[in-house]
Image (tube, rainbow, N blue to C red; front, side):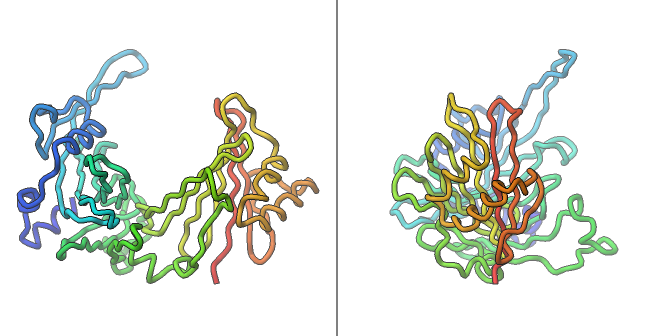
Length: 326
């Protein structure tokens, strides 16, 4: 792994980190059992930092096979990231499968927000490597900070290379914490959307949950708000860098059917902050000028797209509205 190579160039071994920072046994059990089938050793018997795993699966003809892979936990930083008085943990979790290219081969930095029982409340992830990830990411530890350098993954973006070398310099960033929320310095310093103060999506004051995270591929901020509106489960998401990308994912509550687009928009318009855009979309729908899956201009450079899936067991609707940020 490139991250491991970088640690080697710094003269720091994984054992040096592990010796300084102890992961609570209960947390090790939670991390390992979530990611490792049939772990050896058994983390409930012996809490360790490296495990051998074996995942069994069955072919269509009934033949059973197993996939062996390894799991490694590398503690990096112990710190109260969200300033709630409880020490949190940043660690690298690396899974290595056969030939280095299977679905079991991946690595990521996890910023784990813990409660007073050392249970994971929130996991913020920066992907370091996967076979077809957007980037391959190296990192270095400087004091209590993790500094990242990301280059395009050749498997995903061969056009970003010339004569075997990346055309552009690495994307460099760190993760800062503002009011208990992580924000990448790349997003803060380079994205116009970062300058917008009010990023609230739903006007509701009750019955709404809000989450702020970092996109593990693009390192931008992702805001998610969820609420039940009438008989619909609504998930509103805002992300992007220089384009404001707002998505409403809608599905009916249990036992209900998915309404037509006009009824969904009528339910959303009173409770969303982007009500003008949805009103414009509703007008197009009433004029029969919409075609699902196509992009439509609204106003002030806002565009919209609607996807509907009624064939699945759980029917869903996705409404996307976008605008470049000035």
